[in-house]
Length: 280
Image (cartoon, rainbow, N blue to C red; front, side, top):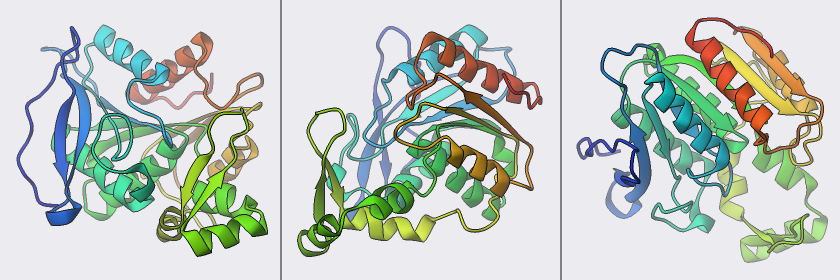
């Protein structure tokens, strides 16, 4: 990625922003939209970075709640839209895990300073773990204070999408390059691109040990119809080399956006800030 300078900071108060960060170079360059709250003078503690889910944007209920939490505690906070999401540039159908990981790393490196807590929801949980690995490999592990993973959809392109495709859908994907996946809630079908599946195989984590190189807190609803809660147990087992706390929410769905769920997320961030790994 060509470093094109640090964009102006946007203090997310009074509706200021979004601002845009260029990522990539030449024909692969795209601008991703972000909102950033700076740390209040005299306040300590790691910053918070929000990594949203597949087809979500940075204005969601959980992201907004974390902004209010950051404002109340004087913390720095960054949220952004992946390319093809929200108000960022790019075509959603052209997006891949690798491209969204590149954007996540660029946002962390350019728009934050010091240790951060990465809060990843669904696909964002996968990206948070991939970002943690990349930061460790580039000798930047000190940038990580901890990870909060909300219903993490690890390897979902393979284990949840491709593995569950009917034979006809796989043939459609092969021949046309796309598959219109029917929506379970009656909404418009989800477009699944061949590139998303094939490129995603470069980033699969399950099947071996996974390292975050920092404490991890996983929250997962046991009524999650999108990502089975048992996958959170599997992930915790694969994170054998890191401190892991796991909160299973018996009546929780996939989104975990109820008031009590939002409180749990903020509590997990606070526990990692204080250096505590506690289950709520």
